[in-house]
Image 1 (tube, rainbow, N blue to C red):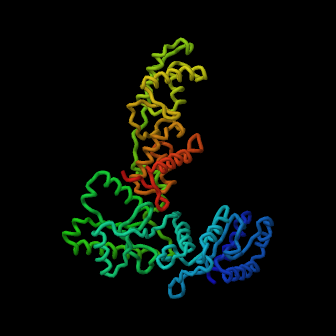
Image 2 (tube, rainbow, N blue to C red):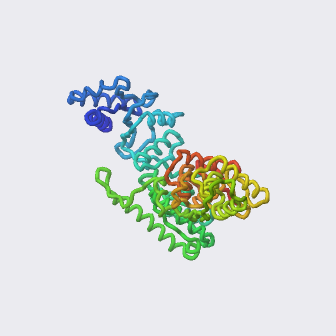
Image 3 (cartoon, helix red, strand yellow):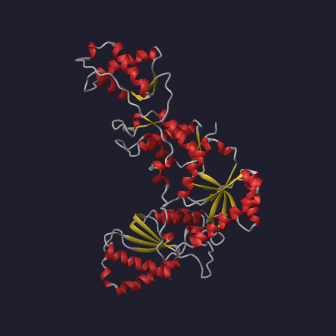
Length: 486
């Protein structure tokens, strides 16, 4: 009833403050739907000045319906009342009516996508109140994911992978902690990574107190592993994880000391949690957790710093016509350009060589002449053609950052082979990454943080990813892309 009253009050506030926006209310049960209608009727009698809103949108009239009756009813704003939740003793039954039945996740998807401008959800729950180990319902899992998105702006959930322990060391740590009374889950997937061990919050079994990393000393001596760990730790901490690290050598030398340190880290996490402000207080967070797609624009968390794109310094000439120029002169310009900038798009070759010869415009005659010279160089093995790009036999293809080359902002002028190099680098160092994030980090690293002149930036990189998947250079697991092991 309290939730129904809050929804009804929000409807009246909407009618007063946003009468131009259409509104619909959906509840998870018929009972909750009726209570909302009753509460709203009482409020409307007390606020007759709002009645014009309820008849102002004949094509999209205001409604209060239950979940199963909301189909194609799009509105500017949708209010969702879950209705189900914690009981007076704090227990949660995980019964959400039609959401628990087969297809419940589709019903929820239909509901939340009816809102054209804004969706607000009313509940006495937070996402970590829902313990997915107690239910196999896809609808309940979808609700937890959506609640987390509503709370944090993130869709990523920390979920059990079903994988076994990675090492006997990891298993030994888990067994000791379980003997101390803690509930431990292993190989928890989050943000494309797997956390070795996670300690379940006994008061809220749907959330974790800390993550524990069980690290072997030999593995972490390599520079690449240290760089990878720095990346994954920054991402995991940005997702709200508190991490505690145990080194295998320290554990085997003195397991009791390392166990005590770990227990202290767990208890400290409990203390920090208990000191957080209650929901009716105004929290002052130390940091703002943002989705990775926002963070990747920040160089501080983008370790994929590529070499800057080098522009060839071509000697300038001034000819009155293309016919008076020797092939040898054009050849020297082409080879000097390719020596520095290959692989380079054929249109860029035409433009750059034409400008060096003193021509402001690159017409079809000039292009034909330059192309004829290039074909001669291809025949003698000095130049190679890759689709619409030219390169040399000695060129090693690397990823290059074009941030400081203002005249080179069309990603279509970057060869697919160069994009492959960067995609593989990002996928390898990320240890699993969603496609959207892989595309964004790749584009950022190449100097295309914005979409520039063309709107097909993401599609172009996505096509390269599809090609790499088809060639088994990359693989997909659990909606994350990984570099294949060499």
